[in-house]
Length: 180
Image (cartoon, rainbow, N blue to C red; front, side, top):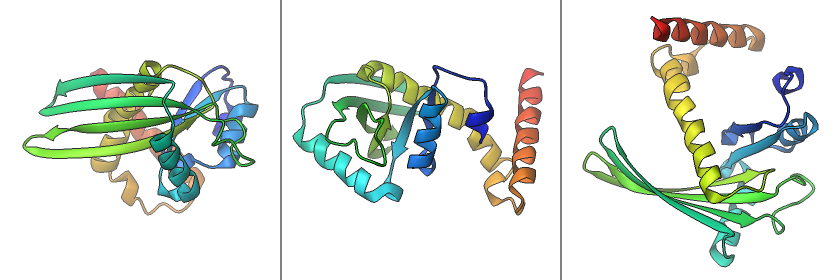
C-alpha cells in the first residue's frame, strides 16, 4: 500500500527477498516504477531456476569490482542475464536476472557468497552493481542501526500500523541525531 500511495514514477525499488512475490512486483509495475529484488530460498523454484540458468547461459554484461574498506577486502562479480527463460505467469515483467558473486576477507576470515536478483529493467552489470551497493549502504546505515541499537526486529508490537509509526519515529530520531 505504501507504493500505491506514493506519488513516484520511473523509480527503481530495491527490495530484500522478503518482498519477492508476484503481488509486490505487480504493484510496482502498475505504479509506473521498476524493481530490483533479491531472490533467496523463500522463492525456491525461482531461486533454483536462476542458479541453473546462470550456470548454462552466457551473461549479457559482466562487471568486476573490488572494495577495500572497514577491514574488509571484497571482490564482486556482477553478471546480467537475459530473462526470457525466467519470465512466467508469476513474474511476467522480469527483463533481467542478476548474479552477484562476492568473495573476500573480513579481518582474517575468508568468505564467499552468491546472490541472485530479478529486475524489471534492462541495465548494464555496472549499473546493477551500483544499485545493489546503494541498497546495502541504506541497509547498513539505517536498518542495521534500527535492528541492533533499537532492537526493532525484537519488537513486541503486534499492530502493523503502530509498528510502522514506531519505525518511522525511530528513523526520525536517527536522522535528527545524525544531523547534530
